[in-house]
Image (tube, rainbow over all chains, first blue to last red; front, side, top):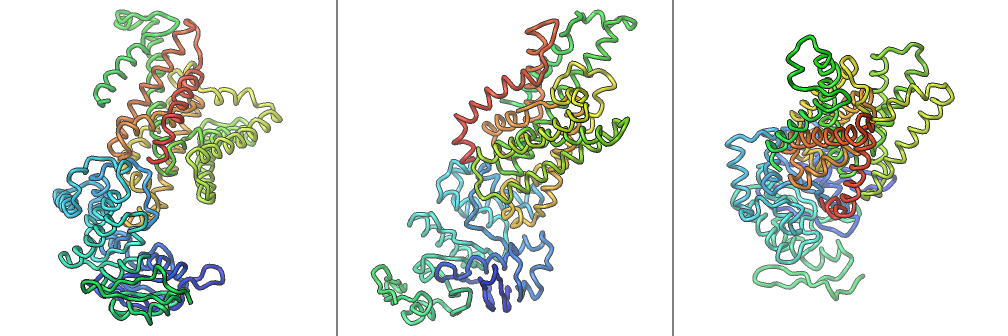
Length: 256
Length: 319
């Protein structure tokens, strides 16, 4: 289990993340939502050890993530950042194979190849596994990256705005895949999302942040209601029920 | 192009190189153990060929490593101040140590090229504007600044003439006893091959490397050390050969991608073949005299570089 305890990060005088404590429930999709500058990505970066916190700690299996050996940590937690634009000409299969790096250091065993094949199958990338990633569209590229993370076979998968620059069709595809990863493979997904409706429809739990502080943390239905949303976004956001999903209709909402 | 075809081409070029020169050597002359021809062959022709192959392969690998670590297709020992820093090191060693020994020169040159490249990577880290063309431009300016320091103090101390031979890459003076330093580039290239996967991962960025549990800084430093070792050995024996580390890895990358483990053998052989061709041209067109190899490389290389720039700006950007 990942436990975030009283975590604070300062940039200059500003507390970008301010005394946040959350437990990530295993086997769920947890979405981080909130307005711009809420500290969502910073929080995720600290969980994944990309950034050091100023105070507080992140625990993975009761021990501080900073104390984990890099290689052991890479077998438990993987992260995809929004800045993962690649300027390297690798084939899709080569990229996915690098997901096995923590296990094999690049010399793939038969077992590694099996994981790579599974990941390719899971993301439906058979027909493009020999293409260079710089020739793929944004959506295909994102799928290749997620396949790499699947091959990495970590219990925790952290994603920083994976839907950025994707169209609707590909966004839905990616979210459905994440759901499958949780339901079928028992993974735990933590995801920073900008689109509140994707968070509402696909996540089990939502962590709402604002100005670095935790506003609310709970099951999706506890967050997606007009009262809580207005607290987070300072807008009146009507919520409609649609085939059992709660959809926020904020496009012509009145800002407070 | 297939690796084995390139190896055969390189072998043919090697034979041409061995039998090309002011003095005509026939194969039958080599069978006579007391002939002058055999002596020339062993003292001059063979060392020259070995030097060309090691310098060509080494500089190409150095360029490949630098392009991967800086994530920029146009960064190479020529466009990042590495060679200029190595030369500055030689000048400093001559300036401060009277009767400087070869070993001392090697050490100074190595330390300076390592520090110089490291400084360039640090500068890159701090600038926000990372246009594919802008970065090597900074590198060239940076190299020129180092160069002007070398020339200024070299001129003041009246040692500019002694420095001249390192400014100009040439195989003319390569004979047995004057090229052996190049052998240290062989273990460096081997290490590059062993750690090829690490360089590929590092080439995808620090975040990417961290996610896979790799220590980015260690790989970065290892890469810079390898580049400095290779550059030093080439500058001190052959002199500066421009463009080689820039063009060869790029040509291979266009056709074979960036999986370094796969491209290293091809890059080495292409580099050796390219330098052999340039040297053969330089030795043929004004026969029996020679044009220094840095001139032929610069002429052919800058033409290819321009083609890469125009045709390849799109390639370098997206790739």
